[in-house]
Image 1 (spheres, rainbow, N blue to C red):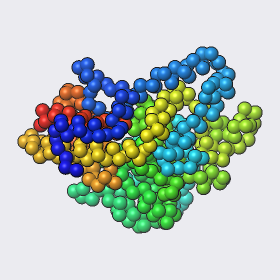
Image 2 (image 1 turned 60 degrees about the vertical axis):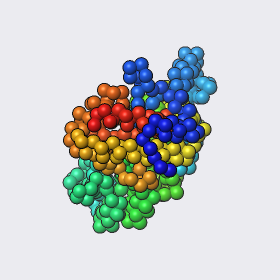
Image 3 (image 1 turned 90 degrees about the vertical axis):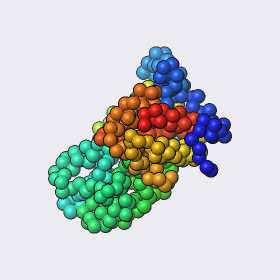
Image 4 (image 1 turned 45 degrees about the horizontal axis):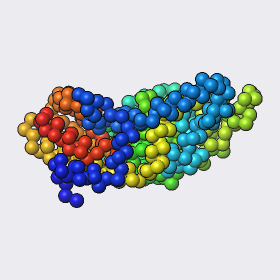
Length: 422
């Protein structure tokens, strides 16, 4: 299809889009009493309109039942986490018993590292990408220090080649091969938060296993954004947050994936009572008897109010299916790429380069745009026109049209406002 930067083209694309009406299920922040242009779902997704209704139902159960809500609420609180199992496993390409909604992303990573980073004198190194999300880097470094190793020795950070911005996957494989007897764990962001690069998780997992390392992923920018098949790919573990593409609200509950092959093994874990078998949990025994699923990694009872909101957007994913959303996402991001390149080619003030891979299978929603100078000023100016995007120092703008609630007309309007800033 030949793309065209015009109002007519954008509106026609929206008319032909069977998912366009989904945007009516979400609240948009306002700018001068109108919906703003919101391309920031890679930082925080929009609020589903049914969130307050669902949350209030849980407040009513608490008010009317008190402690009895654990067993007598419409959705009993003792097993509340189970209502997410089908939805999340579908998004991850996982078995139901491999997923658990709990805690927050960084907490879950520490719990998972306690099980899967078991360094020895000879095999103690962790391989990651150099521009990993900072909190993930902090997890890795603190885990290395916790086990008594030196960060400079134990951390292998794969970098882009000189003059490039994304990491070549063959360089990751080469590092795994060259350090095969020393790497304990390979850990990457499934989608890099800064560049938007989608890693070939299947291929990297295969090489990690081949050379004796465990493999794990941070899926914060992947879940609800790209196609995942964690079980088929042989991924050992993964964790994610739910407030980006899953639209659960700021700081809401995250989740963890643990491959089923580890469920019945005597694998070390940091334990808590909610990971104990449900039938005997309230007998308050001294011995820990883990649930033989990913639920065994739970520590405490579920945060019901946050979880109730999380379920609202997941119901939309269940109804539509991730495949249809990904298909729309590719069309939106292709159109955004076209508009950005067109307008910056015409600009006399700024030069720009999209550093996100151009191949659709190597990216999700997000495009990361490298600006040659004064990216902060450009960001401020377009923000003042009612456009919500993301600025990352020193000179990158991150722009993410989300198929659940963004439209081609949004991209056209973004282009018109961008022209005013160029």
